[in-house]
Length: 341
Image (cartoon, rainbow, N blue to C red; front, side):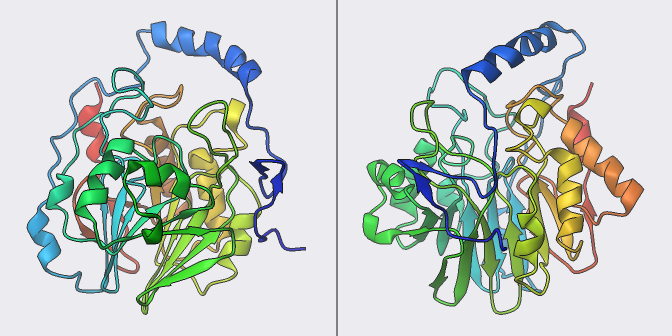
């Protein structure tokens, strides 16, 4: 029986596609001693010891379409601009200083935005995978509401109610359940299940939907895994398509205590293999915010080691640098090593 089904609710809460332990106050109490131990350790490097960047995006590059039809600019963490077959999709944009409900506390950016939002050329679609603060920045959305006046906002069920108070007109928002698609002037976006959760506070978890997405242009396909723990659905999603040019999977902000809802590098490598290991693998969800207990660069160093061991075709561009995605040509910039001691 297929795992790829529309999401269902139990009461007010959406359910994961497979049984999933998200954790709550008991988990926080369990992890807190470890967090304090690491925080007090002189060996801990949860944030870069050396300043990162500055990284700068040359806005002039966008005046010329990518020669092969697919170009991606990674702005850190899970924020990306995907130029695909003439369409421009801004994914999970967070230009905010912190991934937090508070302006004065919470995970702070490791480096400044590589380009001002008003310097980005017009985008066709703004894609928001779910409502967590590291994927949906309030100040960013408020700014885009004025700048990206012609964009279609595509998101998961229920997230429109988060976007509207920030200035996004309901008529511009398309909410998708898992397995649903929308066509935006020839670009097809399809929502698929992922194993995660939602909520902008501890009191409204699961009340909006989360998911992964496929972007299909006339010539190229991209899989955006967003946030997900390991589950058999990766292989099922890949089976619906004849390969992806680029597969984006999360590697950071993971821990064994919440292993059901985040992949980490080892499970990302396994998921890529389960999906057929076709095209290029882009690690996302790392390198910008301190959201976990591991060293800030541990996930990427681990995925690089796995790539060397198993021949993974990693695609790791410099933050803010528009980079064409070319078949059979991995990218391994190693930019992050500038921030190590």
